[in-house]
Length: 317
View 1 (cartoon, one colour):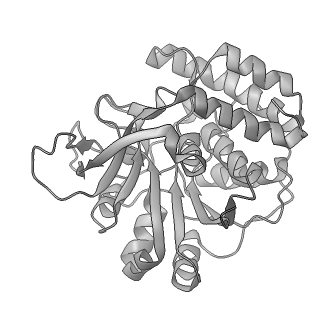
View 2 (cartoon, rainbow, N blue to C red; view 1 turned 120 degrees about the horizontal axis):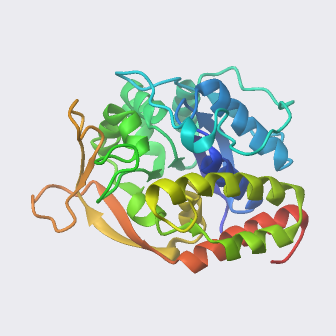
View 3 (cartoon, rainbow, N blue to C red; view 1 turned 60 degrees about the vertical axis):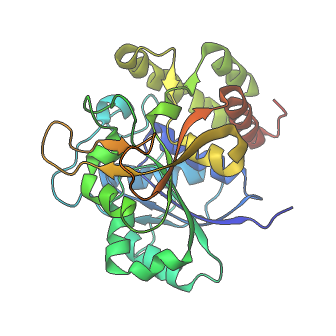
């Protein structure tokens, strides 16, 4: 068996980030989770930070270190998604206040210190606005020398989900996304073209319900509440699991297909602000700065997710 992957998750929980955290913690033999960094995003920072702690406690992993970071984007106020995720970010459930506490170090300082001193190259998984990562890169560009891979949930080749043009994470802080895509690392990118294929069907939710462990029942309640919004506004057959796709890729890369392309982030203040222009056919002749996925094995992904959540009760799905 390969050694566990050194990993930092940067996120903004949010229902789907919450599920992504549970996936990582269920696969502890696969990941050496160095820390979770959080920013404001789906909901304000005080909620996203608390939700990350709650996910760790629900999973029984109180030793995970969580670092609060930037409350909002670089150049403007935060665009919230509380209509999607509920006021607290955990739509449909009320969990007790966490006994765990945040680490005193700011998330950006943690990213820099960890990446500058890690004996192994570290993978960064990002599932929220990219403010923390961008500031760390600007403050200390040398951290990129110790980054194995950056896997980002963001962007769309087609329609946006926060504006007609833009996906939420990139729209929330386009300047931060621009910094990432011009940093010199090839960014592994999972956008709406993939995530809108990963939809929670009623049949799959019934399988999840059958597991009957406390963790899955919390997830089930959230996903039922989450799916109502997506079905109403995006004409899909269930809730869209955006952020868990990042962890699904890290666990089984063969589930996803795409190709190397050039991606450019629109930082204008026009209607297209935050749009990721993906040069799929290499028409502009620009350098490759991303590997963008457009296909996913949906059945394989949901089998993987069900198996991970089953671990919390010792079941075999």
